[in-house]
Length: 105
Ligand code: FES
Image (cartoon, rainbow, N blue to C red; front, side, top):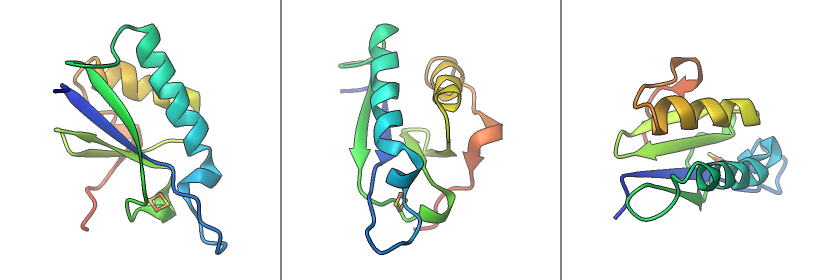
Protein backbone atom coordinates (compact mmCIF):
# COMPACT_ATOMS: atom_id res chain seq x y z
CA UNK A 1 0.00 0.00 0.00
CA UNK A 2 1.34 3.42 -0.99
CA UNK A 3 0.08 6.78 0.10
CA UNK A 4 0.74 8.30 -3.31
CA UNK A 5 1.59 6.75 -6.62
CA UNK A 6 3.33 8.62 -9.42
CA UNK A 7 3.13 7.32 -12.97
CA UNK A 8 5.76 8.83 -15.24
CA UNK A 9 5.33 8.29 -18.95
CA UNK A 10 8.66 7.14 -20.37
CA UNK A 11 7.31 6.11 -23.74
CA UNK A 12 9.74 6.26 -26.66
CA UNK A 13 8.29 6.70 -30.12
CA UNK A 14 10.18 5.87 -33.25
CA UNK A 15 7.84 7.48 -35.75
CA UNK A 16 8.98 11.06 -35.25
CA UNK A 17 6.01 12.15 -33.17
CA UNK A 18 6.71 13.92 -29.90
CA UNK A 19 7.16 11.55 -26.96
CA UNK A 20 8.03 11.86 -23.31
CA UNK A 21 11.30 9.94 -23.60
CA UNK A 22 12.59 12.65 -25.96
CA UNK A 23 11.98 15.16 -23.18
CA UNK A 24 14.26 13.32 -20.77
CA UNK A 25 11.50 11.40 -18.99
CA UNK A 26 13.60 8.32 -18.25
CA UNK A 27 16.36 10.33 -16.58
CA UNK A 28 13.92 12.57 -14.73
CA UNK A 29 11.91 9.61 -13.48
CA UNK A 30 15.15 8.13 -12.10
CA UNK A 31 15.94 11.50 -10.56
CA UNK A 32 12.51 11.69 -8.87
CA UNK A 33 12.92 8.22 -7.41
CA UNK A 34 16.42 8.98 -6.15
CA UNK A 35 15.35 12.29 -4.65
CA UNK A 36 12.46 10.65 -2.78
CA UNK A 37 14.84 7.98 -1.47
CA UNK A 38 17.21 10.67 -0.22
CA UNK A 39 14.29 12.30 1.57
CA UNK A 40 13.24 8.97 3.09
CA UNK A 41 9.90 9.22 1.31
CA UNK A 42 10.12 6.40 -1.21
CA UNK A 43 8.60 2.99 -0.68
CA UNK A 44 5.91 1.19 1.22
CA UNK A 45 3.40 3.50 2.89
CA UNK A 46 4.99 6.52 1.23
CA UNK A 47 5.45 7.39 -2.44
CA UNK A 48 5.98 4.99 -5.30
CA UNK A 49 7.31 6.16 -8.67
CA UNK A 50 6.62 3.97 -11.68
CA UNK A 51 7.45 4.28 -15.33
CA UNK A 52 4.38 4.00 -17.50
CA UNK A 53 3.57 3.63 -21.14
CA UNK A 54 1.98 6.39 -23.16
CA UNK A 55 -0.61 8.36 -21.20
CA UNK A 56 -2.10 9.96 -24.33
CA UNK A 57 -0.73 13.37 -23.46
CA UNK A 58 2.24 13.24 -25.79
CA UNK A 59 1.98 16.78 -27.12
CA UNK A 60 2.35 18.20 -23.61
CA UNK A 61 5.11 15.89 -22.50
CA UNK A 62 6.92 14.85 -20.65
CA UNK A 63 4.00 14.22 -18.35
CA UNK A 64 3.23 12.41 -15.12
CA UNK A 65 0.12 11.78 -13.06
CA UNK A 66 -0.19 11.46 -9.30
CA UNK A 67 -2.79 9.25 -7.64
CA UNK A 68 -5.01 9.25 -5.67
CA UNK A 69 -5.21 12.99 -6.36
CA UNK A 70 -5.52 12.40 -10.12
CA UNK A 71 -3.43 15.49 -10.83
CA UNK A 72 -1.45 15.70 -14.08
CA UNK A 73 1.77 17.61 -14.55
CA UNK A 74 4.03 18.58 -17.39
CA UNK A 75 7.68 19.03 -16.41
CA UNK A 76 11.02 19.68 -18.09
CA UNK A 77 13.76 19.96 -15.51
CA UNK A 78 15.04 18.60 -12.22
CA UNK A 79 13.83 21.85 -10.64
CA UNK A 80 10.30 21.04 -11.84
CA UNK A 81 10.56 17.57 -10.31
CA UNK A 82 11.85 19.07 -7.06
CA UNK A 83 8.87 21.41 -6.95
CA UNK A 84 6.38 18.59 -7.59
CA UNK A 85 8.00 16.53 -4.82
CA UNK A 86 8.28 19.33 -2.28
CA UNK A 87 4.98 21.06 -2.96
CA UNK A 88 2.62 18.29 -4.03
CA UNK A 89 3.92 14.95 -2.76
CA UNK A 90 5.25 16.20 0.56
CA UNK A 91 3.36 19.46 0.98
CA UNK A 92 -0.07 18.42 -0.27
CA UNK A 93 -0.47 21.50 -2.47
CA UNK A 94 -0.95 21.54 -6.23
CA UNK A 95 1.80 23.09 -8.37
CA UNK A 96 -0.46 25.22 -10.56
CA UNK A 97 2.47 26.37 -12.69
CA UNK A 98 2.99 22.84 -14.03
CA UNK A 99 -0.52 21.44 -13.79
CA UNK A 100 -2.31 20.10 -16.85
CA UNK A 101 -6.05 19.78 -17.27
CA UNK A 102 -7.11 16.22 -16.47
CA UNK A 103 -6.79 13.83 -19.37
CA UNK A 104 -10.05 13.16 -21.05
CA UNK A 105 -9.06 9.65 -21.98
S1 FES B 1 4.52 9.56 -25.07
FE1 FES B 1 4.15 10.29 -23.04
S2 FES B 1 2.02 10.67 -23.04
FE2 FES B 1 2.36 9.76 -24.97
